[in-house]
Structures are given as C-alpha cells and as structure tokens.
Amino acid sequence: MKLKIALVTGVAAAVAVALIPVSLAGPSKSSAVSVGVAQSNLGRILVDGRGHTLYLFAKDRRGKSSCNGACAAAWPPLIASGKAHARAGVRPSLLGRTRRRDGRWQVTYNHHPLYTLVQDTRKGQTNGEGVNAFGAKWYAVSPAGAKVVKNDTMGSYGDPSSGYGGYGGYGGYGSW
Image: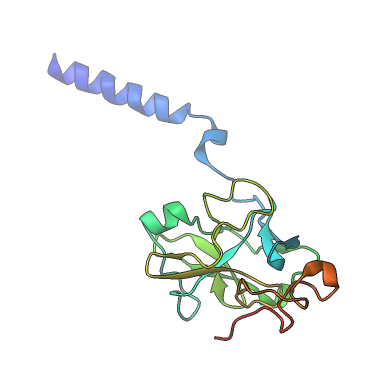
C-alpha cells in the first residue's frame, strides 16, 4: 500500500511539473536586455529597458560581481542570456558580460557589473546613489562608464537650468 501511495504521489508530482506553463518559469533565453541613457537628477545616466537606473558597486573588482545572496536580492543584477542591446547614447563597445557565482550572465559596462535597486520602483528614481550597503558604496553609471558622484554643493555650474548639464562643472564623475 505504501508503495502504491509513493508511486501515485511521484507520478502526480511529475505531471504537475510538466504542466507548469513556460511563462511562469521566468524570462526566456531569447529575451533581449537593453541598456539606454536617460536624463535624471544626477545628469545623464544608464538605465535598463524599463527606464530604471543602473548602478555599479564599488566593491566589485576586475569585472566580477561581489554582490550575492541578500545583496543581490536588494540590488538585482542585470541578467542577460545573450549580448545586451545598446540603445541611443550607449557605447556598444563598453557593453559586456560576466559570469556570476550562480552561473548566470550579468551585463557589464566598461567592466562594471550592472545592478538595479529594488527601491527604484519608477523610471528616473536614483534612490541608490551614494548608498553605502553590503560593504561599499553604490553609484549610478554615466554613459562614459564611470560612477556618477552626486554633488550636494551644486553651484551655478551644477544647476541643470544653467545650461552646464548639472554635472557640477567638472563632469560630475568621480575618479577611480
């Protein structure tokens, strides 16, 4: 009797798994990931296909991600099964990929693994800029592939309405 119950349970589980719709299994391997440029309160920054800010993690080294587990839950990596698509303003030569510890491919830009932030729920939000979490700071990424440093003491050169682009007069990008 126990053998029959185990057999029926096993068959039922196998059938249930086989009947799960493909749409519930996650993104398809053919789904294209794109990286674009958008204007924000930080100036021009990289965004994903939904218009959400893309960040770099200062702890990452040599093009490899240091953000896993709880870190990746808060700062989801930009994952792509194939080559990412460069939209207007993005230099295709700076786009790449790196293999994560879990085996998935993460999009890189100028050798920086790219991430979004769960708290950025709408286009244009930059809630992660300058945040120190999981052992290092997080920065939005410029179209040049550098970190964007928020300038809290913006003078006339940093005022976007002044015509100088809102980058604090010196490009607004921190040095590495």
